[in-house]
Image 1 (cartoon, one colour):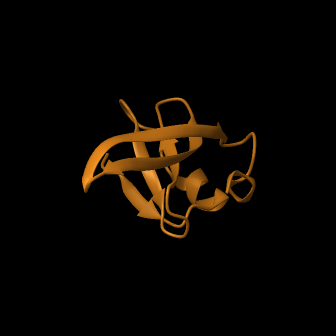
Image 2 (cartoon, helix red, strand yellow; image 1 turned 120 degrees about the vertical axis):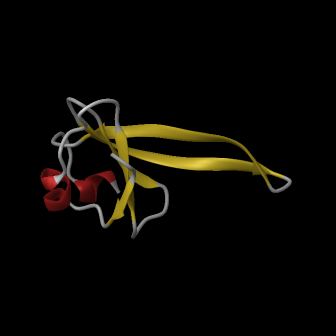
Length: 77
C-alpha cells in the first residue's frame, strides 16, 4: 500500500488495515513530521525529519514514540 496523508486520530488509526507485507506510513496533515508506521503486526507512532545541507537532502531520520494502544494519538503529539 502507498503512503497516505490524513489527520491522525485514534478513530482513523483503528480503521486502517495492517500491512499485508512490509509496512506503510500515514503522514499527519496537521503536524508536520508526525507519522504512524503500519506494519504486519502493529501500528507505531513516530516523528520523522530530513536533514539538508546546501539544498541537498543528506538523510532522513525517524524516531519511535510509542505503540498505538499504549498511548493515544493526542498523547503521542
